[in-house]
Every structure is written in C-alpha cells, then in structure tokens.
Length: 362
Image (cartoon, rainbow, N blue to C red; front, side, top):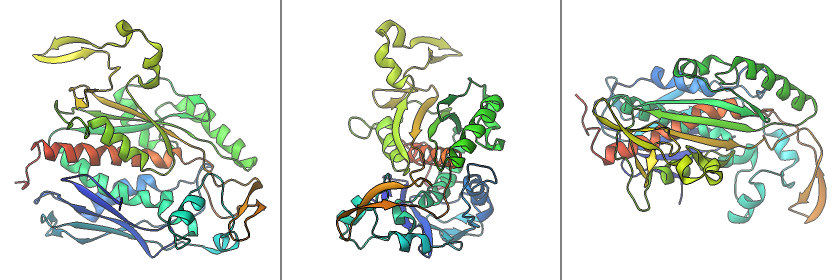
C-alpha cells in the first residue's frame, strides 16, 4: 500500500473527495510541541479557494479537528490524527458521467486497478481535495523545523506561459497575500486576464511553482536511495496535478557547460558556501547548506467546460463528455501551500533521522 510517506515522521493520508471526511495520521511527532487547531487552520485557509476567476465554486469550511495526539495544547508523542469533514459535496454531476472516462483524470487507471470499486465521485482519493491533509501534516512539520531555524517559502512563478520577474525575500514572504500567491504584481495582472480568458472559453491553465527552504542544515539526505531530492520529488509528485520537478538549474543545466553549471565554493563568515546555486542546495543527494530550491510543473485543470471525446467504460464504445460540476480554471495558487507542506514533511523527516530535532521538546 502506498498511502504513507516518511520513515520517522510518517504521514498517512485517508479519505476521498466526496466521502465523509479527509485527513492524515502523523506518527513520530516529538512530544512537547505546542499545537492547537488554530495553528493548523491558518495554513489550511491558504489552500481554500478564493473569490477570483481561478477558483472553484465548491466552498468547504475545511475546519480541522485534532482527534488524538494532543493533550493540554502539547503533542503527547502518540500518533496525531487530523481530520476535516466534507460538507459541501454535490455528487450529482459525477453520477451522470460515472461511466465516461474523463480525459486527464485517473478514472481509467483507478477503475482498472481497483476493479471498478473505487470511489469515482470527484476523483475519490485522486482528487486535489486530499491535499488539505498534506497541508495539515506540513504545518506540524514546519513548526518542528522552526525549532532548528528552517524556513520554507513557495510562490507562483508562471501561469499560462506568463513568467514572473525575480523577487527578493521580503516580496516572497508576502506572496501569500497575493490572489495567485505570486510575488510579482505586474505578472499577476496578466495572469488573471489569461485565466479569465481561459475560463470564458471553457478551458483551464497550468503553471509553475517554486519552493525554497532556507537555513537547511548541511547533511540531510541518506544516499544512495533515500536522497534528499529523491524523497522531495516523490512527495511533490504525490500532489495530483504535478507532472514535473526540477532542482536548482534543473533542465537548464543540460544546456550549460561544466564551467557555467559548477557552483564555486567560498568561505563566508567561517562557513563553506557557494557562489550561485545551480545545484539547488543539494549535492550527492545531501543538503549542502545553501537554500534548497525546487520548481514543480502543475498541469492545467483537466475538468474543463469544452465537450471532449472519450470512452464509455461500461459499453466500451466511443462517447462525448460534457463536464459540469464545480472546478478551478487554474489550480496553481491553491497548490502553492501544498508544495510548502510537502517540502516541510520531507525535510522534517530527514532532520529527525539526523537527530537534529529531539524526540521530546522542552
């Protein structure tokens, strides 16, 4: 089974898009961490749909409940169970098309793998809805990483081919206040127009999110198979819409010469650092002390308003599909806090494995 992530900080996802609830169980959280539902709610609210052109009309309260693992506002060392009840579900649109395979969705593969017993409503466990659980777990992980000074940021750097200009840390730290989680206001205006045009055409747009972890200790990662970028990529690919992951210079490195791609080592304030960060903060699968920089490609929302050709899985005949329901014209902004969360989960797991975070916090 593949619903768990991590070795010491282990996150297990449960629930489906239109089921009674969604959530996570976290095993391995150190005892003594101050934690309340309000702490988690702050991050969950960043993932909620907004009121703009990009957002779905499905509006869930997404109010977290801590069912176990916290006593007198501190973690006990027992497994944490964090849960959200699904309340604003409307499955009628999915009942109408339950035999029609939606292009770009996991309907076909899920039906074949699970013999048709999978929950097809809203995509079931393959829906972006389950990422609310990832954000809850990521919030706990970020709080633990804060103990050792690690900060994680993420922001939108491209939507529909419209790219942002580089921004400094002050702007990146305020990206959550932007409707598209973007640090470039001028690019945001162009992106919003592109999203609105796509929505009017019954279509959708994808984009790119950049995640950055600052003050990451040297030495995180367990070669040869549990490398830092390997586990980060695995976690990021668990976000349903992610189709590409790159670190540092990424695919651009393939166009460089070695002299251009190599990050020169220097001594700064008594520490080994590099000029440039084409490696994305990772060498040999191990963090090198520079910021860990990763970018993820998010595909366009597959549920669109255009009529599409497909197959009826019951009759095994060609058919036409007209998707109704409630869907985002662009899911990139809502995926930004999920990228932050997944980076936090992996980095927290490695920090615990390196014994940088104690089992009992005092």
